Structure formats: C-alpha cells, structure tokens
Length: 109
Image 1 (cartoon, rainbow, N blue to C red):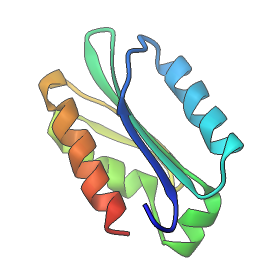
Image 2: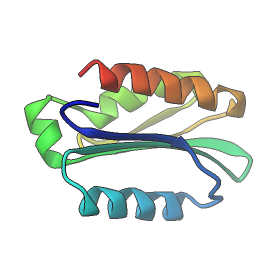
Image 3: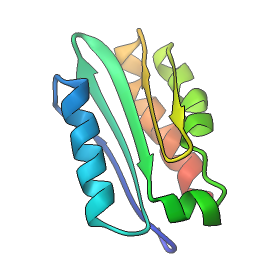
Image 4: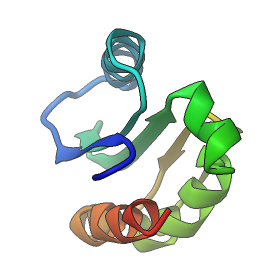
C-alpha cells in the first residue's frame, strides 16, 4: 500500500497471547504499518489488528471501529484501543472473509 505497510495474514498460532506478542513486535519494528492477523485459537476464530500510532493520527484510523465491522464475519465482537483491537467469534469459516473485508477497508484509507 502506498502510504503505509500492510500485512494481512491467516496464521497458525493457538494462543491469543502469542498473536498479541507478534503483533506488537511487528508494530515496534516497523513504522507506518498496519497488521491484521486471523487465527484459530481453541477451535474459535480470532482476529487481531494493530496499527502504528502515527496512522491512527494521520489517517484517523480506529482499530476498534474496524474490528467491530469485520468481526461480524466471524459472528463475533471485539474491541480495544484506536491502535490495537482484537475479536473472537463463533464462525471460523468466516475468517477469510473477515480478513478480506479488513483489507478492503484498510486499503481504502
């Protein structure tokens, strides 16, 4: 993406803590980055979205608002802060469409 780096991946990690750790490590090692990850944790879909603080300011990006929108795809809900949000849900089959929806929203910023 032109004005920021964007990573959108379905990953295999069976731990919400590990996903959070990776998200923060990527964010802290890059500038101008948005990372959207999806995974199955304990047989349930999980989404994680993190963004560089400067993008929250410059792009008026709000991870919580975006997460609420894309979590519908996994029949779930979530929240967090403007720069970091997570969601869990019931519909693992919706993970790919949640990631696609997130990508569509974020690439339009």
